[in-house]
Image (cartoon, rainbow, N blue to C red; front, side):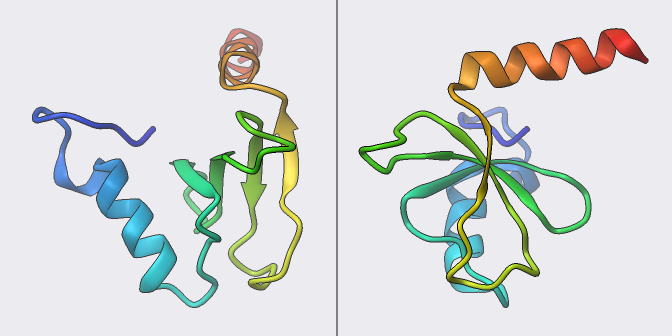
Length: 91
């Protein structure tokens, strides 16, 4: 998961990744998405700041094109974390 703060490794700094994902990639993410985690294949789990969906977690497919409607994964960050923990318990 991307992070903030002085002890965050450069390759995980949320602000740098957000800027890069908005400006340097083939399928840039919209400004209303804040990347939280990469799935290892170039896709991103993001939190949205759109007023009608604020706080929801969505999945941005790097092959989906710039006009895609990202899939909603969870209604909130907290619920997404619970899903991640449940997935770990199932392993």
